[in-house]
Picture 1: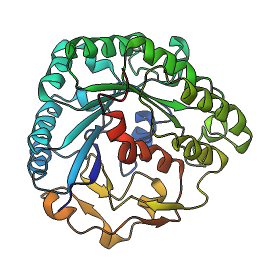
Picture 2 (picture 1 turned 45 degrees about the horizontal axis):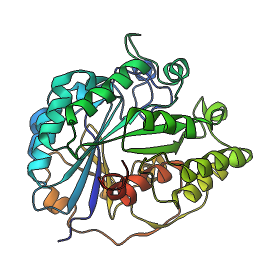
Picture 3 (picture 1 turned 30 degrees about the vertical axis):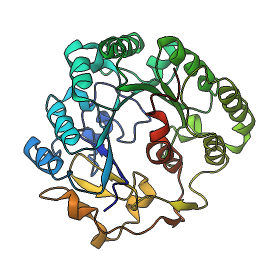
Picture 4 (picture 1 turned 180 degrees about the vertical axis):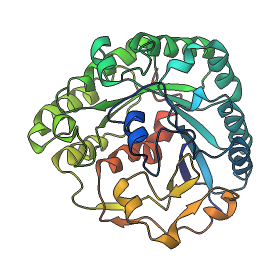
Length: 341
């Protein structure tokens, strides 16, 4: 069977940062009113369940696994899971807050394992602003640690082609300039790729009105995106069609449809408790029929993803959809060592 599936695997729940816009919500909220999936880790699958599933990826339709969290690299067992995924012949991309990369043995191990990409989250080129948007829970970590982590990984790579290193930026309503400002920083650091993303919050989120874009923001966002693509500074970017997807997401929210949606066909989302969904969209998850709810607990990737529909139009558009395009359609471009510096 063809290997064309991308798994976005939220491996573990905990994270040292308390980003108020995190799709998991905040630990403080969860202590008072625990949701089905939270930053609290009591429902996370045990290590043996994770490694057992990873061993079934060989011979499965899975081409690429994007390891996310929480912060996956804070969990010591993550490196064993990553090793098993690589042994299965899959690409591995790590989504990290960057701080664990400051530990040289972590950076060196990612290089030795042959990890294909490391995507580091950084939401502002200004230290103070970034640390307000992405506050450390303990107050011990922040912007400068993230930059140190990137430099440590690039040094550990030492001229090797992999892992490719990139920066992901969540763009909020008040700071469209971060689209170009962070790109400039990414180029100065010597990273390989860059992906700005429109913030995705549910309409009932307490920060929705403050952070989410409106149609009135299209002009400013469009100007910075155009400037980015006219001068990418040697960085690999998503395909130029991403500009229109980004603008479409800014123009509307949870309205419309997604033509040729690959959720449930070429993309799946796995939560720390083992739940498997067609994509991370809260709208798509809420609409999943009980008989379609699955888990990797005692599961086998060779059968779990064996029968899949073709891509179809989806009427459950949200800004999460825009953030998934680079993972599926653009990742080969971002991981191509000849695409940039």
